[in-house]
Amino acid sequence: MPAETRSDMQHLKLNLTFPIERVNQAVLAQAIKTFDVTVDIRRAQVQSNVGGYIMLEMTGTDEQLDGAIAFMKSLGVGVGFIGSDEVQAY
Image (cartoon, rainbow, N blue to C red; front, side, top):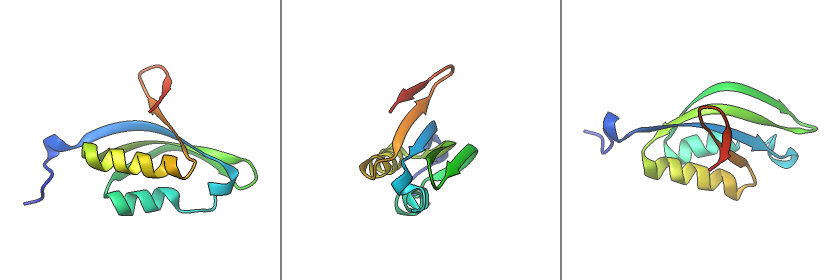
């Protein structure tokens, strides 16, 4: 039986902003693989000459989510929490 159960899983709605220098790197794919989180991309706009954003829902345990978010932030990706009416920094 896996260590995580459905009740341990958290869902975060995030807005990731990517600087130009990270657009062509697999930052999100690395976070998914390394921290075993699941993502559901809701909206994205990414251009190699200006950067971009991805709005998504990320699912995992608190530890997995914290690790994935810290990893992306360490690479210069902006991470914002999407609340009911506004985006707040996580």
